[in-house]
Length: 102
Image 1 (cartoon, rainbow, N blue to C red):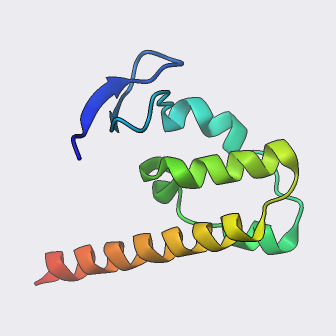
Image 2: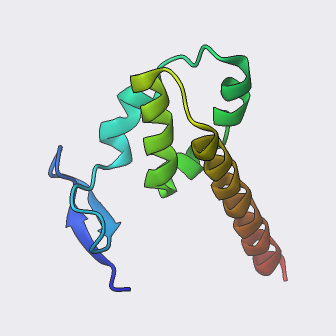
């Protein structure tokens, strides 16, 4: 799949890596205000407590959190997919750290 850089559609300052699927790329800096809102549900609060770097790297994780703030709840599939994506990112980060140490 071809990836290329495109300017953020809101601020027109930051470049983002996008593919043909992403027609409206928005950078982390533009979405930070929406992401910083308080999470009221204790189960989801624990789920959303992940490193900030994960939100910077993955637009999907940002969209799930923004959808929670917008609609007040998430479906079971959204929660499961969010957890799977975080688990994969943690595994990738561990593999990179292990690779760098060798």
